[in-house]
Length: 161
Ligand code: THU
Image (cartoon, rainbow, N blue to C red; front, side):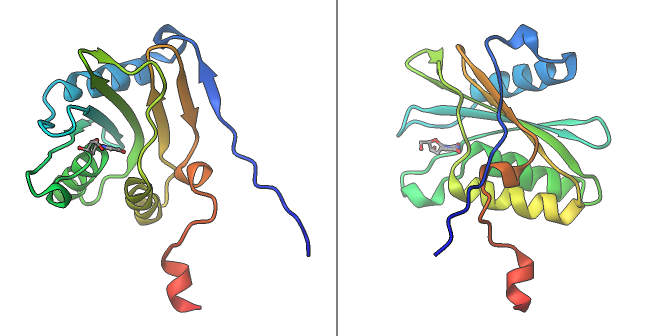
């Protein structure tokens, strides 16, 4: 038996002012998107914003449904919209925010497993790392790519093994 460690590097910030102008813009766009989410069941309003290689910012938010599994997370709404509109333009970064009970969460909001898988596919598709900005009112976390969030990932290379 051999034990190994997988190390994830996380950059932590105490406030939005510590981020670059570009990242601040993306976070503010994700916050704005959260206000338009459709989440009457969970009342957890998630907002995501993608920065594309052509400079465009694409927003997404969670879209719930009375048949719960038919809804979709904010991150995937944004990614699928971006891929549908701009199939040849890479996604460079994503910011994620969430609101409940009238205020943004204090802790940074990480993407769920299914969204990580879709973000991984997007990194693979455009052969570019996607920076992930997890926003919270008291702390912001940034990782340089999706593999940092999901080290033992499944991707298309496994299909050929
Ligand atoms: N949600 C997201 O939009 N993104 C995530 O990564 C986690 C969860 C949504 C799904 C559902 O509408 C609500 O948050 C509660 O789970």
